Length: 245
Image (cartoon, rainbow, N blue to C red; front, side, top):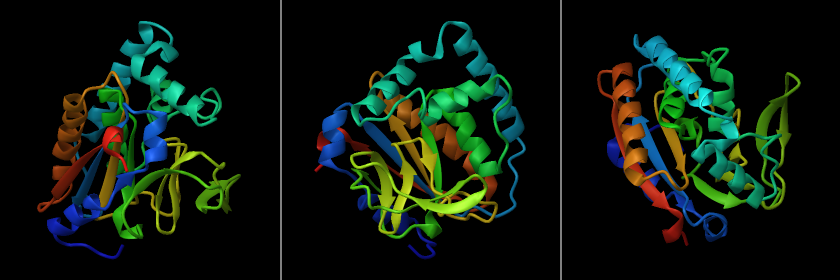
């Protein structure tokens, strides 16, 4: 989408984002909060990130001590959503479940941006993804795939282009798929890197999660991102399946 340096550009990008009616029909309770952030300074470190990850690991252990992971309300809801478009949640886990399962042995440490959003995902029990907006082509959209869309990924250590299954729920831009199976695996092309300066964070929610809970996760996310540059600015937009066209 080219370089951006004004908050108005973030608002314009978010205004163009949409969820298709086909996706809304699968889960009328679906909502997504898109948070666009600019002014991130490459190489900046949030000194609280290790503490944040440790908090998330502790929170996950407490959650999983109370019963099986599949019985957590939001994990169960996402398993149902995956089955609705033909995915097998035991084989391809939503991002929240995948992180919760890793927390006991330690959450991954990738880079400050990724570490922050992974921790917030676990702490707020919400699937949360991050993308490099300077690598986007056009606004994000959530749709059911035709099966022809390109997905840039790595398999067995080799860069490859795959394609989603027809009917699969995918995040896309004009160049192809940016995340497969709603929130399962992100594309290599738009992943966050150390040099990322402008980012998009996608916070997914199904019932019983409330809109207030989604915004609370975004508030904590932005509070940490504000430490990654002296002029960090953000914009957000909540999209609901019930208003999808």
